[in-house]
Every structure is written in C-alpha cells, then in structure tokens.
Image (cartoon, rainbow, N blue to C red; front, top):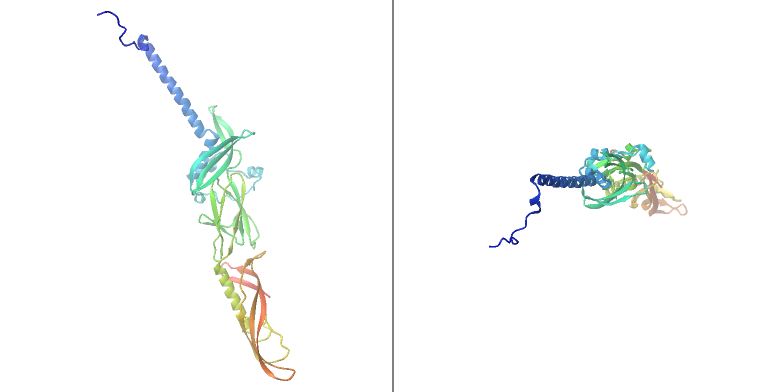
Length: 356
C-alpha cells in the first residue's frame, strides 16, 4: 500500500490553531453576537418607547386601558390655560369628561404616519377602532431631552386632547355614556337661557355620542369624532316628544272648554266671541266645534304654539229689532289662537300663556 494520503479527509481550519486561541475566538464570537443582540434590542426599545411613534402609541394604549391618570401624566398631555390659549383654544374648558367611564372601547391601535415637520416636530398619525368604528388622530410630538445621551425623550408639542364645544338647543342638559351633564355648571350663562353651551376637554382618538332625554323632550343622538388639538362643534337639538304635544293639547282643550262655559257673547280672556245687533233672549251657549291643531315649535326664548285656527259653536235665541220676530241662532264662530310661551316646571307641570 502506497503512502499516498490524498484520499483522506482534509483537516479543519482550526486544527492548526492552538487551544488558547480557539477559546479567544469563541469568546470573541460570542461577544460579537451579544453586541449585535444588544444593538438590536436597543433599536427595538428605541422604536417602541423612545420614538415619536412609540410615544404616541403609548398614549393611545393608556386610553385603551382606560388609564386616564397615566395618559394625562404623559409630558404635554394635560394642557394649561396658557397652552390652550396659545393654540387658539378656549383657555378654561371643563375637565368633567376626562373620565374612564366615558371612553369607548379602543382596539386595533397602529401608527399610520410619522412626518417630520419643518419645525423639527413630528406629526404622528394613529389609527384605531372606537367601539368598532375607524378613528384617527394626529399628534404633534417633539423631543424633550434624552436618556444616557442617545435615547430621546418626547413630549406633546400641542395638547392631544379635543375641546368639544357642546351646544344644547332648547334644553339645559345632555347625556353621554349614561351620564347627564349640565353646561350651566361648566360655564356661567343666564338661568332662563333656552339653549346652553359649554366647552369640554375630551380624549382622542375616539367617537362619542351625545343626546338628550327628559320627560317631554328627546333628540336624535349625535356622534362625533374627537380631533386632537382642535375645537369640535357639537349641537344637541332637543325636540318635543309625543307626550309633550299631548299635554299641551289637553291643556288647550281644557282652556277652551272653560271658555265655552261662560254664558256671554264675549267670554273673558278667550279667543272667540260674537257680536249680535239683535236682542238676545236668555243666555248664549258655547261649545267647541273644532279644536286648533297643536304644533309646538322653538321660539326665541322658549317653546311656543304658532297661530292655529279653530271654531266655537254659538247657540242663542235672538229677537229681531226690526220686526220683533224670535229665532234660534246656531253658528260656528271661527277663531285663531297661539301660545306665546310654554314653561316646563321642575315638577313636570306645564304652564301656558295663550294669546289670540
């Protein structure tokens, strides 16, 4: 057998390396891997917690957890009167709606945009589902220092909250998430104001639904999307319900029936009457032939009933001054009336001011 060993397996590249060098190379490789892992983890941490997108996402996630305290504790989140005025917003809105039980269910939170502005600030757009409905909010974020010199810290350059200007037309309260609020308690206004309004701080991104419910008034619910750092106008329009119309109609009928009980040609304080040139024998008798159709409308200072037509039937015996003949007169006397003011009392009663 020859000494040709060309068919044997080649030796490993590290075969010629001394054991001590092998240890050094092994630990060097492990060190490189650790450094790469550290750099990757720092990058991940920076993207998740030390980036404008991570900062904005953390804020919205606090809202999703209904952790209002944590959300407002983030730098720049809870505005001062001065910062609100600087943004052109009302300086003293109510904080009454900054509460967890008003927040909707937020899911599917994701960043859909992160634009660097000329000022150096970042405009971060976050999307989510508010009770299943798509919503978005754009947050203005700026750097506010760093950790260890290379992990930037961030703050809201503009408030992430919405200022909702809620106007309640024809009522003095509105409802939201099972709560009833009185704008008069948030902002001073006349005690007899027919419509009231106030500014409220609210969280974004979120959809909110406002309404009104009371003994005689109702409204179609109004849903609006909160816009971060902006003022949103919301109108709740309260209108008479069927119970309101029925009560007013009943009172008007009673009023007219009482007028009809007066056995005179011109019932005092009533919208109908008659003038007869002949001599009246006995007492005239009135009855209501047609009650006016009741339609309640909003006036400048309260609810009113516009002019409506009706008819009262007059039954009376008359003697002609010309020939002395006696006849029975049966006529329907048309009339119009209106209600110039309807007052809703706290005990549920209703007062009417009737005008001809």
